[in-house]
Length: 262
Image: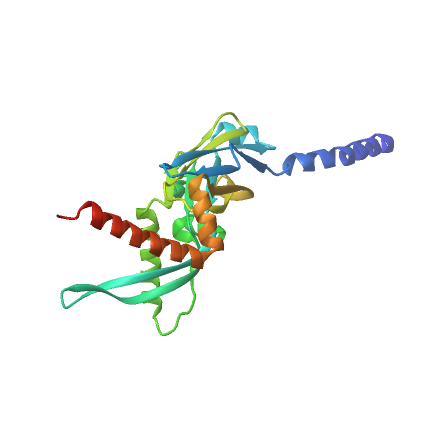
């Protein structure tokens, strides 16, 4: 009887690690790849769609069949200072009376999701992850004597302006699963998308719980004649200004000759 009990106890010990592994499976990971890592901006650029492919590793088959995996993909532009001005009517004219400078504001921010963001997770998770245009941590350069309400007003105006110009956008359903673990995301590039290094980020959620994040870089640059002018203006600002003034004078002189009345 003791031998039988010992064998049973040994079998229980041998089975224990496998049972533990079954209860604690390897966590999911996520990987993404861009259809291109460089986008050229020309004079006739009217916007484009960027396709990002991704894969989820160590997928739980049951969770996948129930459609409880969600992916949010973000394309975030380089961060730069932004000045927001408020105009008021004074003596019949619109005048800039107040302004606020913000530090490190993403110049563009495009989002693609598997479904509506409010259906994926709770607002606290988005704020913690700084995920979504309304949850970006936008800081003022100097608070000065402005009240929190005034700062919030300028911050809301900044976000609304970015959305109105198409630089901040959201595409619900822009992420689609091609199989149990493969997905494709389509993001919008606005016609006025700024040049620089952009970062694509993918967030994986399971049952509304954030699991993992990954990222990749995208370079957006000017090409052709526009690139030549852009480089010259940045590298030789003084001479570019002189050239612009001379060109304006020449254009005015030619216009005077062409449209002169004899």
